[in-house]
Length: 195
Image 1: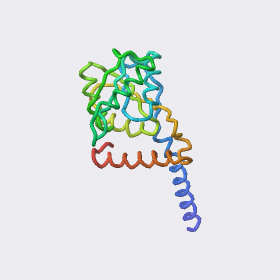
Image 2: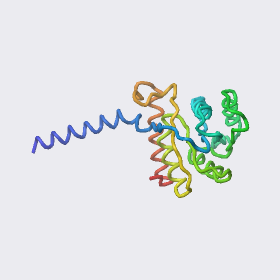
Image 3: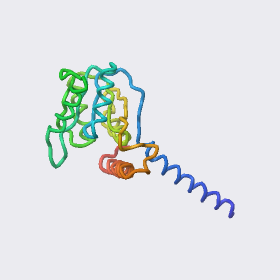
Image 4: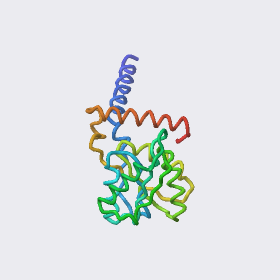
């Protein structure tokens, strides 16, 4: 009986260790890009999202880039989206290829309003781009809200300068982003029944 208890304790300890070290990699979704109708860039980050979207556009993965950012909940404004669109233009994406979505003020809003824009433009496929640590939550929300739409979604995580999914616990930003994402995941599950 003692051996069984000892083995169960070791197994539980192993699962805790695996969970701890795997917390960062679990958040990061980075699928191989496929040719799509549009690249959807979720607002936020420090330019890495726009950099990746621009690279995908220039590599010919999609003819359009949709920027989804209506500002913060307590301060709705198109200013940040305009800045992000400026980054795209400065990096070689023509203004005629950029589609602004200026209502979303959360990841949930990103999914709601981009789906409406997708339908408006007749798009049937998209590559969703966000920061590495933000991808798991984005994936769950978009999959839930786009379900039954007939729109194919693929996910590409942008490498973030201040966040390494494999070594997340080694920096203050790693701790902050990882813990914040798990709290928000639970919040979305409770509020919206994402799973």
